[in-house]
Image (cartoon, rainbow, N blue to C red):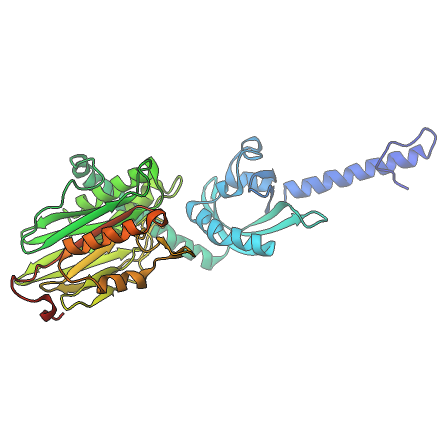
Length: 426
């Protein structure tokens, strides 16, 4: 019998045990060599992703020394930005739910550049079912012709986005330097033929919020406006707020299209924050064009709640902008635009989700979009200032149920003096 748990006793089949021990050592060396020089990559990680073991093949692919990787890096640190995003949003949740994921296409940061791989991971558990570690196998996927073609296309798109982002930075840098440093305008400008009102509720006076808005002239007779909400609070959110506000203002000097404005902001935010903790926001950007007794509105939304219109006849409805993605989370994102016309007595309302996500009642239910629509429809259509005043009172009534900052911006066409607003049908 081969005894591997202890040394042989003197005189007890010593020669046989010694031979078995040598044979066992050879097997172990062979297994270790097979692991290290395998044609695919192997690694084991702790449950938080920290790399505990990695073979030579994978180290050669990524061009790093073992001492720089083991215990110092996580598996996601080996992935490209896109690969890390996919891992965090799809791969990791699926692995946590099923305990095993096979053949997922990802990109790692190889020594010679981006390297396409297929990844299989399995969670190893203890006898009582507790997860201990994750074993991962990484296969080289460069020989897959279809994948290579898609990879090339993606590289071309990414390179074009990088060149466009650099061009935007050069174009906007000088303009951004001369803009004011405040996060919100001191007061809204006077717009001929238009009434404007705004309100900002700070949920916590000890924290900087991420809501922002502005109204400013573009050229003769046309005005731009925007309202947005940055994820998070504090100095980091304030920095994103400042960057978003000044980017939109500066970009509007060169282009008036709302979708182009949000696309530029998306490029700037993603390029600025993609290498660290991701920062993103929602926003609506629009252009006002007065024409006689009405104002034409063209706006676009990126993940932001739809604007609401209070008509002069007392009705109210949302201006849908479905499908717009959060701004800054991906290198390229789709945005949705919409158009409407404001007649005398009509008011366009923009708001951040602090309003609709306020907690109300004993069950702390969300206030919600339907409740806001009903509230607006019950208000006398007396113009932006009256609507903002009513909404400010509504916010105050929420008490401690309002735990997020809220920004409101209302734009409307004044009704002619002596003309009943209810007679002005949309």
